Length: 220
Length: 220
DNA sequence: GAGATTATAGTACAGCGTACGAGAAAGCCC
DNA sequence: GGGCTTTCTCGTACGCTGTACTATAATCTC
Image (cartoon, rainbow over all chains, first blue to last red; front, side, top):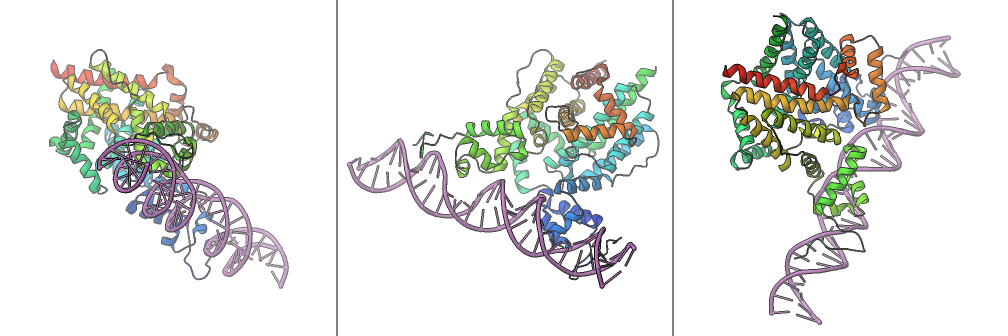
């Protein structure tokens, strides 16, 4: 049976891994909207249709890309359940910030194996916490929503390397024009860092503390 | 100055409102991925390029569409701040479920005036609650993340009219195959409703209760 | 050597957003 | 009325997209 070691006309050899890895790099650099099968093939030094031997669709390629991002999250944790949950949340947050294009896809695309394993792990950690079932459920959703929501926000408001000139102008306009004073106040609160620079971790701890307190309330 | 009452060859007359409304209907029916400028023009009985007199881009049209969805949220509220926040959250959630295609766009697209007004209103309500600043901030993000995250989930797991055959099969496979037992358990927990059919409202109340308790703790 | 399998790729097609420019209809001014 | 300008509509065309279909080379199996 023919191993993936074919050449034609001296062109390099393709692999699913190689394709995914190259696509990941391109998505990181230019955003996923700019990623096309043609550009990807050119980058790989291959013909467009060669990709379709390894990938059914562009959509399934994107699924694979998102799962590739999920694979970057370290599942091993240390300490009690709050520490473990914190580590998973932070690692996921960081992986998403490393690949901002993946944030909108994260919850849109059907999860791949790595993404499922990550979810499984977080649920396992929460199960180990012996929380009341409804609190565990709330906790899971609060954590995942925090991870995704916060990442989305940091990207939306330009708190990453992805920020454009136009985006900064829009935020600036929001702050200087008098409309929506509360919104402006809120944005300022975040921009100025209100004395705490690790906002993600700060709110994360509030959530975890709340969960721990719910458990304590229940047990006393 | 020529009012928008022109015809050429007996074609109907265009308006920005008419365009947005028709596009909204098409997006609701077929999803936003299926919405193209050509199809929209055909539906309107107009030429494609006529649209570009009213709309700069397809992107800005989508922004207008999302803001059109935001405009459906009733800003008037009754009762104390928890009741008011609840009303805003529920109304937003319902508007998003009415237009599932808007859920991924909601946090991706730059907000329009209606969306800003809605955010302003929620912040105003929270400001009226006299919460400590960090709690108010946490509350705002918890609420918006809950609204968006929950809507996303209901659509992702087929809990709407948008669910496809394939999606149900995937969920079914997840439940029957033995991989990811905790995930399966979690999905079952939600599918079976765990005795509470208004899950969104249930978790929403948990958040609001938590905020109210934080305030009480602070004042005593 | 013959034939099946594995892998690569060219061509072609339908669809997309939209730049450009032409042209019709109405308003305005004299 | 006649001319000029503004407002609005739209046909054509270009470059881009994903991918169906098909051909073809290289290798494995027998």
